[in-house]
Length: 242
Image (tube, rainbow, N blue to C red; front, side):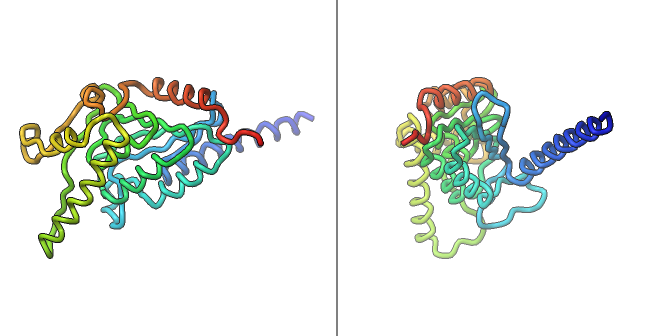
């Protein structure tokens, strides 16, 4: 009898260890995790480093791969057990079209979503931050607003400039539609020449981002989760019984 109890205990320990290893692998591969023993079942999605698009970045770069994030968002939206999505952002920006595609997907989700900028939400990180139903930022975080840029050899300058202008319009339009800042004010911040020594644009801190209307609230991780819980409880079930 004692041997059976010992075997059962060992099996439980092995199962627990395997579960932790599986969760660690999920975090490493996809940058996301679900907390099972919580008030509500929340899926945590991280967007860190550079948003990698169609081109593969060097192996020493910390990246968020859009081919991982996009199917994950589809799965989260369809999963009846997931009640809310927390998006943690600490990104320097990256591929514009990949980042904007992810932002559009998040904005189109029915599930309650809260974003929290920790560290930085720069460049294409701005539309990613405002794509959630509620956007938050920690006091020490910062965000960089600047126009779309390109590097390398440009063939067909007028056509390229037109294309970049169209992308810029898509980005500024998305940010203004999903936040409380006007498009004119956003453009003026992006073209500011007095904030950055080697570039044009504006760097704003957490409280400044809220004052400008880019981000909804300043808060901590606890605040973000409490707001997400409140949204879940006020909205009720995502799939009401027929």
